[in-house]
Image 1: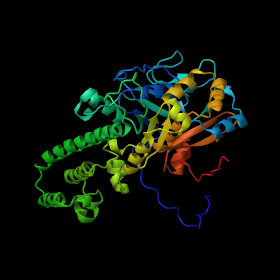
Image 2: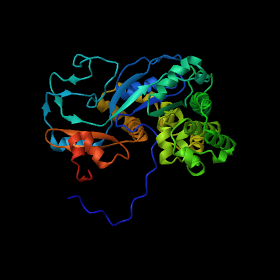
Image 3: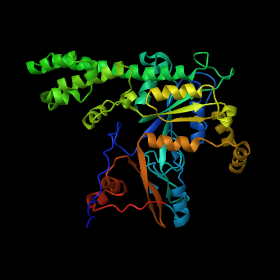
Image 4: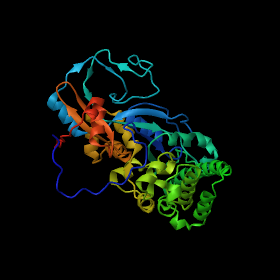
Length: 420
C-alpha cells in the first residue's frame, strides 16, 4: 500500500516552467564572433573543432554530449563496482562525450552503438551542447547569415551567453572595441527583435483568417482588447475579461495571445522574465520564442584577471544582469582552460594549486544542466550504476517510466533515499 499522506502543510506550488517538457534538452553557446565560443566548446568536449581569429569561423553548429560531474555518482561506482559487459545502446545517452556529426568504427548509421571490447556499466548524466555561430547587429534582418544562426538558437532549450571581457589587439572584435555591456545589449536586442518579428507574422496570418469570420461578438471583444492599456496586456487578462473567448480555441484567442506577447516584447522585456500562469506557459511553449529560453552568462576574462578575481568590466556586467532578470553569471578564462586541457591531469592539478586557481568547467556544466531544468536520480547495483535524467517537475510515476514503461503503468509509490 502507498504510504499515508503527510499531515504537514503542502509545499508551495512551483512556478510553471517555460520550455519543452522532455528529458533530452540541449543548451547552445551564443555570443558575438570571436568571444571564445568555439574555444569553450573544445575545452568542454575535449574536441578540436576550428577556432580561428576571424568572424564566422563556425557556420553550422557543432554538437556534443558531455558528462555532468558528480561526486555522488563516482562514490556509487566505487561502492558497487559494476562489471564491464558487451552490450548495445539504443541511444547516445550513455556516451561520455559524443560529437553528433562524427561516425566512428563502433557506431551504426541508425544511431545504435555498441562497443567491441566491452564497456563499463557506468552511465552518468550528460549535457548536450551546441556551438552556434556568432551573431552580429542586424542578425534578425539577416546580417551575417543571422537568420540561419537564430534558427539554430531556436532549436536549443537554453543559452550559454559568452561575453568577451579581455583586451587583446591580436584578437579581432567585430565592433573594434571591447565593451561587454554593449555586446549584451546587442545580442539581447537581436533575440527580442526576432521574437517580435515572429509574433507580427503570426498576427498577420490570423488577421487574414479573421476577415473570413462573421462572429460579431468575437470581433467586438478583439476591438476591446486592442484598446486595453499595455499594463493590462498580460496573457491571463482574457480569462477574467473575455471568458467566452478564453474557452474557445480559434483565431481570435490565438490573435489575442500573439498581440499580448508582442506588447510585452515591445516593452523591452524578455518572455522568460514574465510571471506567467500555467495556462499561459502551455501556450507560450508552443511558440519556441528565443527570449523564453533560460540564460547563463559566461564572462571570458584573461588568465591574470581570472586568477586575481578582478576585472574592470565585471561590475558593469553584474549591474546589467541584475536589471534584466538576475540570471547566473560565471567568470572563466578560455586561455586558462585551454592551457589546463593541454596538460596531463597531475600537472594541471599542480598548476592550479601553485597559482591558487580553479577550473570553471565543472561549474559551467552543472549550472547549464540546472538552467534548462534537468535533474536526475540514481539507480545502483553490481550490474550498473546509472543516472536517469528527467525534467524538473516530473511526477514520480513518469520518473519511474524513464527506467521502464512497466514501472509507470504499475506504479504504487516511490521510496526516495538521499544519497548523503
